[in-house]
Image 1 (tube, rainbow, N blue to C red):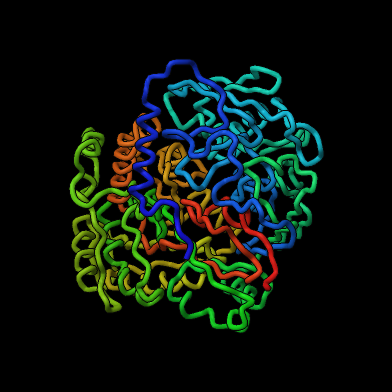
Image 2: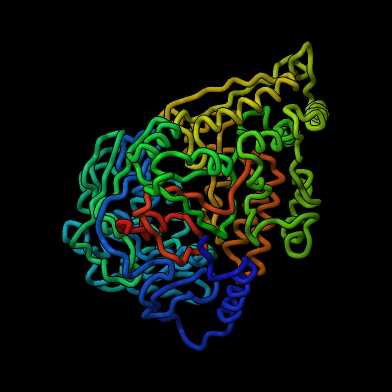
Length: 618
């Protein structure tokens, strides 16, 4: 087992709190250029640091790593809504298209210079300025210019994915301030914006002249990152080749990173096919999300003879949310009592024991496993103050405290079924001749939509097992939902446009939530396609808490706002949550290695394959 440099979460936040106190001291001078910027306090690494603490600067270069994805792809442009893109281009930071700054996954939210050699902002963060490194180059050898930066931000902000458009609306002005410098001035009070500007991909303007950026396609984008696209087999495989002329290979943030000569992704129809390919040696790493399978299903020849080993990588990030989401755009799900009834009917204890042996804890809040999680019992102090103006419209349990039902050990949890029937009756739904109907005689009917390729964290077969057990339980309420399986392209199209009643839902959350929360839970997503607000929630309280988070100048105020948001989300009863793990379970070839110093976020984007390397066994 690898160890953290902090023994517990409280220690992390005590360090942060100290940094906030330092940051809150009066400033004797104007802003100055810096090598890094943190959301709160000071960056952990001082100027002149040698490498990121979780990278091995002596890691050898070379070799190939073969990874896998489920589903298919038809686009190499992951920065727009259209198409089914190759997500590794987007999810692997700096693989192909670099950003002005890069994130350290050993800190809650700190950025260090990448394309930009310095960052500068005022104490209130009403503006931010970046100065490009003179040596920064695209893979074709041309320099990265301020013109490329201006074009990238304007294009992503107007034609890109909704994740970019919402933040761009808060930029009042973008301007060139020097031969290599660009400044953003903001139209709202939002301390996170200075960091978000450092995290947008910088693309080559000249490549897109005469092309519609908003359209998907298979033209390889030109980036400035350590890899270039080598081979593409549409829908089936893609490989990235390390650029021997990569301009930034000697930067401190890159020492010990990007070690493989080739990174290959093969696409499979579902997780079962992926796992069989892993056992056969066709792919090199397998992430296992279920503790019972980790203990049960890894007795195969390559494991027994040492060609494959198992690693458990701890983390201290929030659980996020995972489970079955209810789309409140469907009037049947608009009443929180109905949603609670469907949660009561989901016998989590039995499902967890059946599928995973009950080893992993349940997600009880959106920020479980961190100090950002809402505390048991009634809201107090600053949390209560923030929520008070919205008290009349908040679901029961938001202020008073909310807890999920425990469920029973048998297949049918009679206590849960009785509670569900009572709530449904209060909402106007009763069982009539064996079927749940309202006063007008309309049956309670809905569809459960599933991706036949599974998800990032759950295989299609596991999802189907969960849903099958759940459907059997719902029959006791007089509900017989339709279960529909779609291929990944159809599934993406329908979920992007919210054409579902209930579906599988996964959202990872960080230790520094901010503007992205509006994309997840903001009311604009009720009608606007492509947001992550799959539940269709429209909550003034949630939006107010997100605004408070982005304005908070102290760690305590920030934490209170996040906990208040957590109460709104959890008591909103939008998702029927399942379990999460406090570790990542990775089975991998024994000649693949990762550093001893595990980062705060653990197995998170920026860790694998970035910090891993190939070295033959002795």
